Length: 153
Image 1 (cartoon, rainbow, N blue to C red):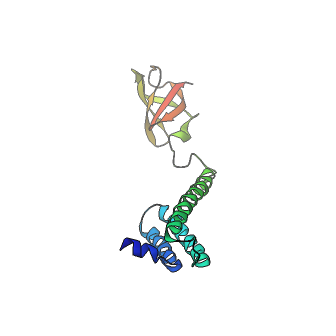
Image 2: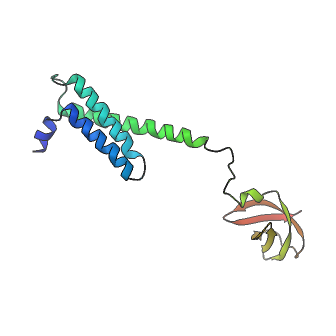
Image 3: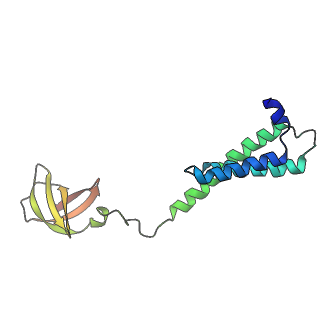
């Protein structure tokens, strides 16, 4: 039964498969079905042109579909990666802790055993650095996992 279905694959079956995959792309998260759907539509277009030729049986059509699927997925990945590279001109947007690097503040709590607290603007931050008494001016040198690293200013 499967072989008879595959043997009778015509150009319109490939195109219907392609449009079904494109429709599923709307329902399924991610963008993987888009590329397979495009490959199915391209295979259908090729089959429309080559239908009836002895060297264009269903096996060759499936092989062409697989090759076009891989090629379109790779091209799609390259396009998406290039688009992500220049997404923003403000790389620190929504990275609040990283925005504080270079700022100075006074210690609210002393740094004891490597940890203390400072207040910058309206937020109290946990800091790590050398042991220092409360009230010492410190400079934020880096931010990692919501914790600021400081040194004496």
